[in-house]
Length: 38
Image (tube, rainbow, N blue to C red; front, side, top):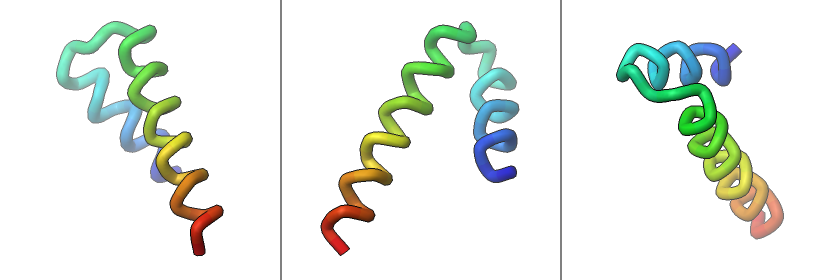
């Protein structure tokens, strides 16, 4: 559900869908690294 809110927020900034996807992919990668370090 948090991801849906993030998508809506990014789209509200008038970003294109590919740009939103790129940002979400970067966030997923960061979250994956943080989880691996714990």
